[in-house]
Amino acid sequence: NVLSYSSPFAEGAMNELFNITYFGRYRRYPETTASHRIPLDTTREIKRYHLQFYLSDEGTSYVNDCEYKNRIGNVLLVKPGDTRKSLGLYECYCIHFDCTNYQFEEEFISQLPACIYAPKTEKLFSAAVSAFEISQLSDKSNILMMNGAILNIFSDLHKILNSGAPAH
Image 1 (cartoon, rainbow, N blue to C red):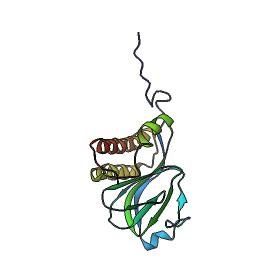
Image 2 (image 1 turned 45 degrees about the vertical axis):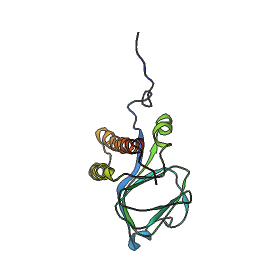
Image 3 (image 1 turned 90 degrees about the horizontal axis):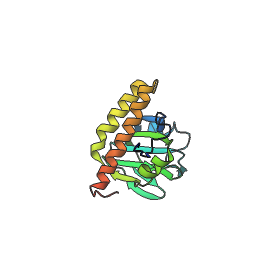
Image 4 (image 1 turned 180 degrees about the vertical axis):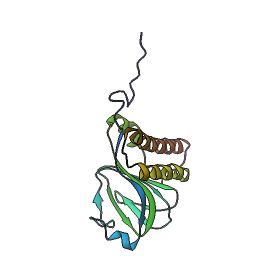
């Protein structure tokens, strides 16, 4: 008799869980705002996940018309279909990605709030961004590393919420 377990990874276990389209450190200053196709202060619909860790206490983010003051340690999670705009100047680590596993998405991402105060995740964001800048996802080990980095961030966010910390 074989013990079976249905996990979000059971089918296609070796496929990447996240299709990462951007991983980096972003500084929004007057000289960088002109380079965007759509101005950041315009409300726009998001097509893929945006996960950001704020490194400054400047600016304001809006997700579905809810205001979130940017502050060091805030993690902002914007989901596909959400509306978003950013005002002011700020600095953050950011990851843009698609989740390729619906079951995982429903169980571990969809339930997270738009903003969580999670200062300890800075090390995870920093290490992931540094690794991505070096690797640019050129082989399978790098793909695993980057997917693992995002999983570690989500794991920490769930730990914080399960500890009773308030969402913002």
